Length: 209
Ligand SMILES: [Ca+2]
Ligand SMILES: [Ca+2]
Image (tube, rainbow, N blue to C red; front, side, top):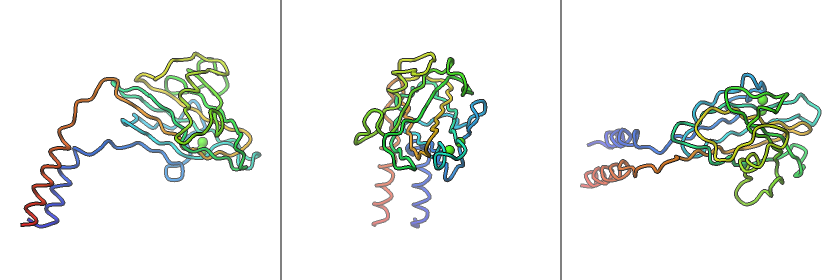
């Protein structure tokens, strides 16, 4: 069996067994996220595990046009949103004391002028709850809100459709936020990894003969 045939076979075996694809939106590659609360960027259903959104928002130089970033996502049935983790936050001005705004609402839109239907909202930033070695826990900040009127919730957030809005007024912020989804019931042990390992070993042994 040729090496290319072996690689093809391994790839075929690996495809259905591969680890979960991670959803990402990087504004540098995928474009600016919507600034319209009634027409957010649709990210679709979040993948199991970590889904990463990164970009810039706020006001270039503190005086430029305001860039809001607003996106819509779905938490699949059988999963919950267990983390909104800020893993990077930097201000164009170099300030480490900025506090930006964030809000979350259920459904396909969010009202950017009236917070009463927000599930929650809160201020967040580099120093809001002490930017430690791992991340800044935005879900906990929202769970502790709303700070500016709204409904309130006790996390984690269940399966459903949500719209998330972040905004800064007086600075431009570069951010990376991880949305983490976790199964609400234990997942059966996958037998696939073992199968792939066995098949791979068998092919390797054949190759060495
Ligand atoms: Ca943006
Ligand atoms: Ca935007």
